[in-house]
Length: 189
Image 1 (cartoon, rainbow, N blue to C red):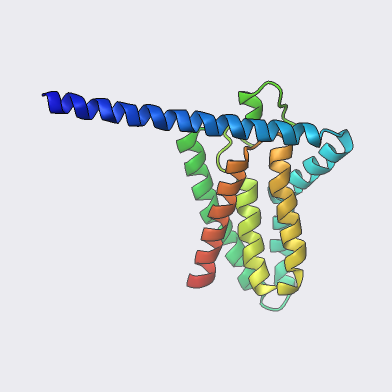
Image 2 (cartoon, rainbow, N blue to C red):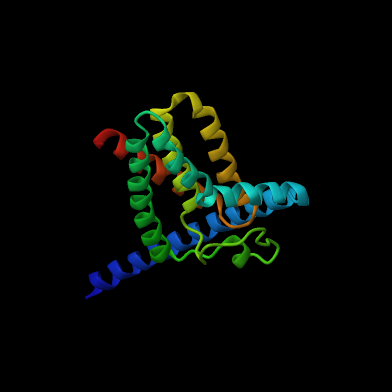
């Protein structure tokens, strides 16, 4: 009986320490978002990031998917993009529902949302996940446009934090998932 109580106390202590680390990490991320949000608080710059974020929401990728069949071998790449987008969407929806992490502007009243949100949860960044995955896939088939793709992807990822919609770890997680799913597609398909 005493051993069970001791084990339970240790488990509770580990849980408490883990919660403290998560709170500390969240405070640091909130401070980073707030700093970046204020540093780039010029209305015209925010408008530019809002535009990049909106285009990165799908408009650019749908346009690429629609135009690829006009190129040699483009049908195949376009279908890969559709399949990759569907796989990423499943990961995105599952993680959003499972983690239910509030967005920075919900957690901190000093941060305001400078663009419209597609849903209420922050983790992971779907914009970044899709941008990284599509850029990786397209870079493989069309290396000449790689700098353009990665430049746009970087702006999309940065825009999500600047606009107060995501924490840096949301963007990083989205990027990692995008790399993993695109890497899987490139190896398997």
